[in-house]
Amino acid sequence: MTTVKCHQDQPEHVIVITGCDTGFGYDLAVKFLRTSKKRFTVFAYCYSDSGCLRCNSLNSPSNPNTVISLKCDVTSESSVVSASTNVRTYLSQPSPTPRYLHGLINNAGVGSPGTIDMIPVLQTPGKPFSYQRDIEVNYYGALRVTKSILPLLKSQRSKNPELTTSLINVTSMAGLVPSPFMSAYAGSKHALEAASTCMRNELGVFGVKVCTVNPSFHGTPLVDGIGDGVESLWQSVEGYGYEWFKGMKVKSIQGSKAAEWRAHNVTEVCFRASYYKETGQRMCGTDAKYVLACLRHLPRSVQDFMVSGHPFAPFYVGGNVEE
Image (tube, helix red, strand yellow):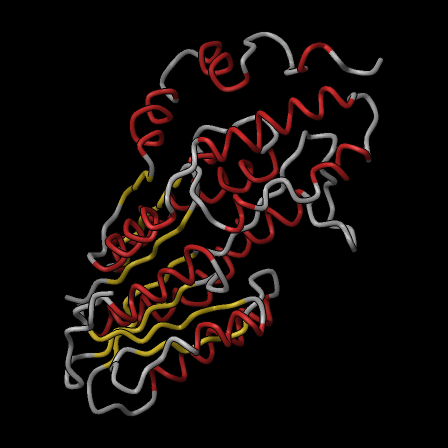
């Protein structure tokens, strides 16, 4: 692990990262803590108490960089406001060196696999997947956190016209090239992708550099757990035989694992985009850059054939669908 090369008398750069319990968010907290040449304080938004404890354990007395974990449910307005109030209070406290809000990384995300008739629209107690869950976390959650932090990002610009800040939204290639069995997840990422384009054009005048990071399949708890609960969803609807279900698992789950890249790739791209305050769009994964990016510009029938295996009809494995 690279050691930190910074000094206590350097300006303190504060960054807010959501979804730090596991996956990209946790890895980013580690990255900013241990490999930055600037002095950083990371506000790590975690959904669980265990996530907060895990992030706090990263701190070391010998390291001037710090992680401050905050429990935050991005689907709750009061929870998001409470977390942002803590950030605002910290920034306003007297400090021997200047404190700046470097930026925000909206990373928190969930995914609900299944066909459109398998996934319920509204969240049901005891059920892990729904359209509402994905849109609440992946889209509304990112908007809530952005709106809570945005006044702080903009106010710095009024005090220092030369100061720029960073806003990173971790979307997905699914938000650009949707695949079968991912309508809930892809829809929420499509929404965030569109909103990010609007933000980039609206907020540039305030010195806020907006960038989306679009990973393909990478090894995270979200991807590794894609099969959890899929069988219960299949059992909840009629019209799909067991042979169809087995084929769907092969296509959606094993296919994603076969195309999976190391999560380290996404961490590096997110870190670089935030650290250097990049703008625009960053695709992660060789398939994202050279296959999916090109696929978007092909005729729709070709896209459908390559994504689903059949250009003109729904995907039914071996025709084993119950009548």
